[in-house]
Image 1: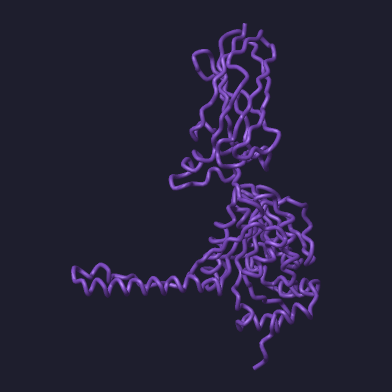
Image 2: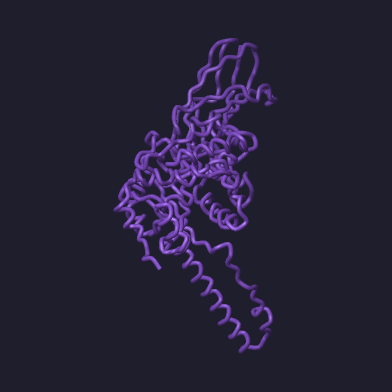
Length: 421
């Protein structure tokens, strides 16, 4: 039996560029890419684990529609396709040109239902530099790819660099003894692929050193673990000795389950790294909070609007300028710009007659000059004119485009009196 091949030995003996070349070999020799393109439903054996782990990662990512997501180690880009189906814009990053070519084919032949919100990007990776601008992406996801990385600190620094403030990098990787498994040893000996152990405390130290501020982990049993339904607490009746025995049995069962839960981190590492304190923005304001979308939005989308005065007089066709000061009293950042205008917050104005009969629901919308964080105030000045003499009312509210008006979440619009004479 050959000696155990340690990943540290491979890292010392093989260059990063050589690892990148090696990563292309298995994909270059693929004759039928269909099973790879069909992931996560390409294999009955793998699907339960992939879907189980993917659910935890997506939850930890705190995704919102239109977010720019880097799928690092994307391979054949099956996960990138899933992210596009969720309404995200993706950059698929991988050292294998052959794998990315299969990914392009996947997106072309099997596009997401409804199409992509933005044209997917496929980026060949040299093992060192991710060819993206500083602070240009919302999220990074590594799904069974980071344990192939020989230069972890350098890659984590790249993740930190390309992430926006409040950005998150999420990982689903094997555990701390992965390199000792038979499959990992076979992969390293046969293909020269690095199958590294994932040591959370080491990754945490490296991540914090490059600037990440927080690390969160998910504790999750394997989808293949099942515990028997315990009926002993029901059948104990009034017998005190039986009750004591049932309590002890219940405690031992709970303890065993808890040990299994803690031990799960040794075989599967699911964790998130945060760049700064996480503050959600309006792309996440519609997420349900125990009572459906409106329940979450009622907490998130709140404002107060102040104007110089409430009564204005002008001649027909004369321009009226209104200055407002608007405070974000909710819990999410108001975006001022985004793909397809999604979740962009604007000042919205309804025009009514003197008796509050709606004349023009979308009379005017005006953008902010920048994002507005919770607790902050921003000015918003707009001008308009009305040709016909009469008494009018302007209702000032905010709208998060394609999500909802703030009035629907409990914020009170401001009513202005307009006299045209």
